Length: 289
Image (cartoon, rainbow, N blue to C red; front, side):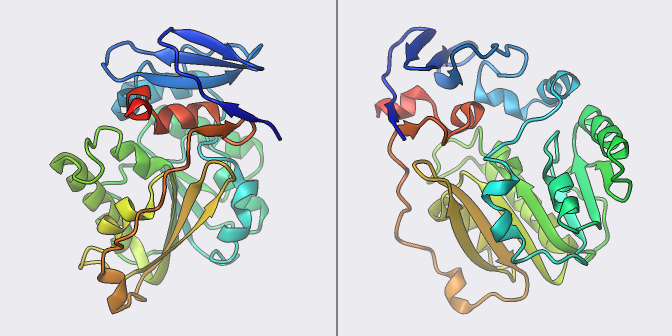
């Protein structure tokens, strides 16, 4: 495997080996970079000019209208072994922010059939419904719903899972050590709703870029009764998979972790990091500092 080192050029596009890097500067002083293979068609309608677009419902509606499938933070095969340790065939599972991911289909093929998926985009919901019907996965429920105000009774799911959905709330968070109050409020609402709809011994699974030092401050709020553990997957660039088990919190879980998890260096292996995951995570201003 050969490493590709990211060289910073203040141009809109540059090439390194078989990859094209596009610097996006429109509508924001922040500069983000997208990594693509040369020869692949560019997708101007899919990739936003700024990561702030991920907070715009209209952006997602337009994207889902044209895009059939995209997997954030690697596909199911990279973390399947972690999930199946905690999700049983009889588990009732809620997926937050399903978009056009195939996660629910993969779980279904592994024998987990009591699945409910929600998304804020009506276009994503309708296209997901049709796709599942076409594949014969009629038991999977797909609903238009807001994860900050879930339309479910208390204690009705064994597992709640999200993959990259919480990360959207941190796009405009400011300093990760002291995020904006609006970000804190939204993340707290999301976690309160997840905790509410989980059964007394339910499990919340979060797949994210968020490092433990930054996520634990939210997961360990005193009103939550879950324990917190995590695994990583990926090689040169790590993704985090958190397992939060309701009703199993120990007193030590409330203590803040005083040790930072290191951010991987900006040495990327070409088959390791998906192009838009990189846009979602990094901007060039941060790499310069």
